[in-house]
Length: 526
Ligand SMILES: Cc1cc2nc3c(=O)[nH]c(=O)nc-3n(C[C@H](O)[C@H](O)[C@H](O)COP(=O)(O)OP(=O)(O)OC[C@H]3O[C@@H](n4cnc5c(N)ncnc54)[C@H](O)[C@@H]3O)c2cc1C
Ligand SMILES: *[C@@H]1O[C@H](CO)[C@@H](O)[C@H](O)[C@H]1NC(C)=O
Ligand SMILES: *[C@@H]1O[C@H](CO)[C@@H](O)[C@H](O)[C@H]1NC(C)=O
Ligand SMILES: *[C@@H]1O[C@H](CO)[C@@H](O)[C@H](O)[C@H]1NC(C)=O
Ligand SMILES: *[C@@H]1O[C@H](CO)[C@@H](O)[C@H](O)[C@H]1NC(C)=O
Ligand SMILES: *[C@@H]1O[C@H](CO)[C@@H](O)[C@H](O)[C@H]1NC(C)=O
Image (cartoon, rainbow, N blue to C red; front, side, top):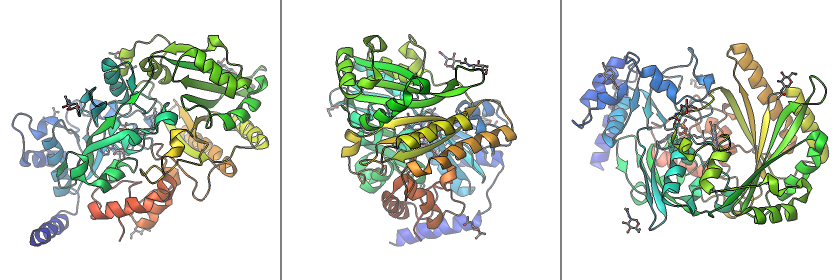
């Protein structure tokens, strides 16, 4: 008790003494040098400050979204490319001593750039050098460091086994650190749930530099929170222990597109009732994009049904023609491949790309991006769908991806992890707006399109709250300036529904001083 008082007092004195952030990068380096250090790997050797020649390269290498890669984007005072626990502890010590905010980055795919930008003085704690994957075939588990990319994880599993996989994202350069901590969905979620549904352990560093290397030592509450509640509000995740899932030796993929002129409306209507209720080995994503019409200048909507069946093409063909005969899937539309090859397919690489591309951590096709999300609980009516397709043509450049739920997703209780969007959801909508031309006016215009489409969709999607997917971070749905409960509740119930209150309780218990802050953090209950 006495010890606790002294520590608390020290903390208060410390924050009072240096409440003004120190913004001199050299002072930051000196601070790192004063922290406990491992002579074999000094703290300052992994710190990049703006005068280091590779500072900009290191910063930009994991900024996939050009919206947050402008001269006007607030830059960190330093990047600590931690490679050991000691580096992390030193960085956290200096965050305290110099009153700096910490932004933790693993893969840098945050849609609002929260892992590498901030409006207050900050540095980036980069976890990218934490890249071990340890697959244990004996018990079918793996340890995955936070800085491992989804592509590397899939590759390392496939290296050891043809019949094991893991349910996680489609993009292969996502960092496990951020991706798992926000849920993590992918093409086998109807069979196995989300990444977090298959996480069995983790390691984390708290704001005082205490290291918890397993689930027991970190406690069930903390372990619950970092499986979907966003780890950035709770500490630095070192890695996750996962349970691998069985995949067949052969899976089958297809991609069939029909324009509105070719009967897409009927197909979309059928998709809405079939995709969430069909065989859970089958995942059929629906994407709506614009293509040129028959007359010059005319645009129309193309509906693509991109699917994967966990099994061979005969079975795929049978299931599709039983449950979705309207699509008239042909045998020639189906391609059998290994599960690991399907990962390359879903990531959008051209047919024939070798699986070694999964080890490439370089982000392809940098562009300006805005994403938003919605959940649908009742099928959209034919009239509604007609209006939506018309609106898509009108707003231009907004794509919509529909991911079906059901199957395993509907069986897992919504309170088991912070991710609440389970039973009752037919599908999730992702709105995608991407562009390549720089400029404030262009950006304003493009963001307005995303918001206009989202506004238009309100009658058709979940309400009270209008649910949103945390991994599709969207500051439009609410953000926090003063880290109050009231501010946090606005976005918190959209991302977490009833689980928001438990996240606040856990936050209050383990980070009452709110050391781990961001624009969409979990607030402390005062
Ligand atoms: C092209 C693209 C495709 C995507 N596809 C999918 C998909 O198929 N399925 C899906 O579920 N999501 C998908 N996402 C969303 C993705 O899951 C999130 O953006 C996720 O947060 C990315 O994790 P990251 O480590 O790469 O990001 P980062 O930007 O590094 O981190 C995201 C958030 O997590 C925090 N964080 C990162 N590492 C740690 C750590 N070690 N400890 C504590 N906090 C940490 C950051 O501070 C930040 O708040 C996609 C995103 C993009 C850009
Ligand atoms: C960056 O520069 C500082 C000061 O010159 C140096 O101490 C540090 O090691 C450099 N960082 C890296 C990663 O080279
Ligand atoms: C793999 O898991 C088994 C069973 O839990 C365990 O006995 C073994 O030590 C593990 N192997 C490694 C290399 O960790
Ligand atoms: C669509 O039409 C525009 C001109 O209206 C043209 O520039 C573009 O290349 C066409 N796109 C495709 C995919 O044919
Ligand atoms: C990795 O991908 C990037 C971006 O597409 C590419 O420029 C680079 O050549 C690739 N590297 C390797 C080793 O394949
Ligand atoms: C944040 O706090 C400041 C100072 O108390 C106040 O002026 C401001 O209105 C608050 N902002 C929000 C969004 O609550």
